[in-house]
Amino acid sequence: MYEPDQNCTNQNTCATNRDGKTYPEASIDLSITLAIQLTMVMMITIISYVGYLACTQWGYYGKCGVDNIPDISQVMGDPPVNKLYAIMLTIYSATKLAEARAYYNRLSTFVNPLLNNFLFWVAVVAMFSGPAIGYYDCFFDLYHH
Image (cartoon, rainbow, N blue to C red; front, top):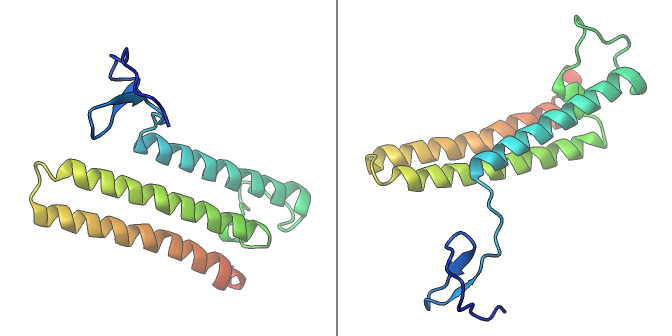
């Protein structure tokens, strides 16, 4: 445990606990928006790389080109990458939940509570339905593609 720092005067590098004592800040300064953007970049990078491997090395789709681009469920639906896809969707869902909670608190000061609750529950439904469609498409409806 950190000892209180008597010389800690900068609020950007110091944290104050409930007792009023200041401690060195031990958190990472990462916004929710940046976390979501990094998650989307991670997902796009992985899906693009796996699609490249599928077209060049795995031989699933024959000749890949502009007129023959594989679907995400075709690329990410086969083992072992389907587990990676499930993990990516779970991470994305968790970051979207954090964003929904942050905006709920931010909007609560000036938006009608009924509208704010409605927007929050729409975000929760979207958070579950988006990955659920991806799970269904990759795990249960793969042979349809």
